[in-house]
Length: 594
Image 1 (cartoon, rainbow, N blue to C red):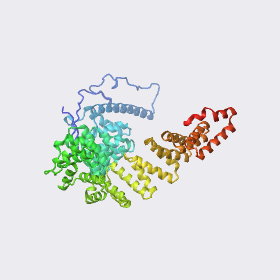
Image 2 (image 1 turned 60 degrees about the horizontal axis):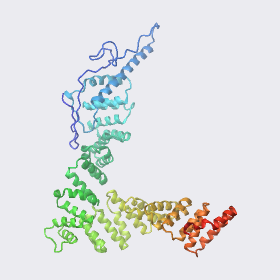
Image 3 (image 1 turned 135 degrees about the vertical axis):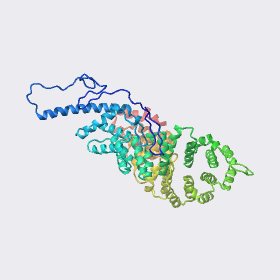
Image 4 (image 1 turned 60 degrees about the vertical axis):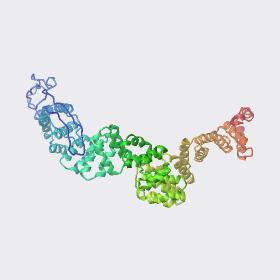
């Protein structure tokens, strides 16, 4: 027999072949007419070797018609269940492969296994006579029809039972039948339902994407494939199929994910490695791609070689960058240092956005803001594809105090990767903050907190906005989060403690002032405030120590002296004379540095 193989339905999506063996023996089965089946039992026992369980009942003169009908129905139902079990066992044994939208099955001698061929029409007859089949049986029957290429038969069965049974698998096979019949809109509806019922079904997502491509919803198809990438992480054929459709959505994060998966599966695929490196280059992730460009240096064209040099220069590897850039010049400058070579490349007509950004950043670092702005503005056409150039322009306008211009530039910036979007959000919030539009700045700054290196600055501004608006609970939360990032920043610790105190969160305020005097032990105000909170919570001994420390640091401070007197008064009214004497003159006076 020929092996069963999978082929292609359309040329864009390849699939590995599947091989299975057809059983060479007969199978036990039960027929409605009770005839003995070759290979089955011949002694009157059932297929599983058990004796018949229904016998004539003695003692009745005439059985009622409904009893006979009930008896016959019971026999039929029992037979049906046996057939279903046998059918499911055979399908799971010989047709266990996933039937994907791109799978084409070649049957041995053009026929299904004999036992399946014999059981399918009998199971259909049960349906025609009003018997209910199990959901997994119906799904298996639909799969058998699709394997045999009987797509219309599968569609009719699915639609005839749609009001009785429902499952993600049935919806999928129904959609696949409709897809093969070129009823793509209907197939899309079934595939969407299958995906919603079973979001972890890779084959349902693939069918949905194929339907969306056929109906012209290419962006939706790209988004469907992008969302299902974790399901296809080890399936190179589907990953490669997904690349052009995901590219159409402009979702660079998903494109990086799919290309990363492909290169993980095929580390020797040079072109995929370089395409991935090009995308990472546009996103400014130079550290991730230097190794890739370096590994395939001999395969790099002039543009990619220039990008490699830009990555090296951006990472501070100037000598290596100089070597790369020099190899791109036909005539070397008189003084071949890195920046003269970079300028020579620019003067020779090379207009890579990264090269322009490198020169502009050099100008900015040297304080030549106007020249940097002029260069970036001159290459506005490159800035559209390079967020780094836009951000440099924004930085120039900000240093000039032209906040509105900087804000407008960010507003006109095309959508980019998640990293560039987070940077844009932070800069937008920062500019709104500078313009005094603090409430408008809040959502932008909250998004900017996701940006590595921007979280601290964003939290500082958010904390100030919360304090300014009188929302001390929110301010306390922000400053506590900030204090975990800056554990030894006295200013942050003081704001965290003060906001907690203003919000009435005494225990957190005490903890905050303890942290403050740990970092700033010579702060009399910190010790005094700590003492106030300890006294309010009934911890008079510790409060007295804190007040004494505050007075030692600043003897002229009236608050600490007054507070200490109040603590003595409270103790005098609530404690014994012996305790008061120990409190005033004993070991309690030595804590806190006294």
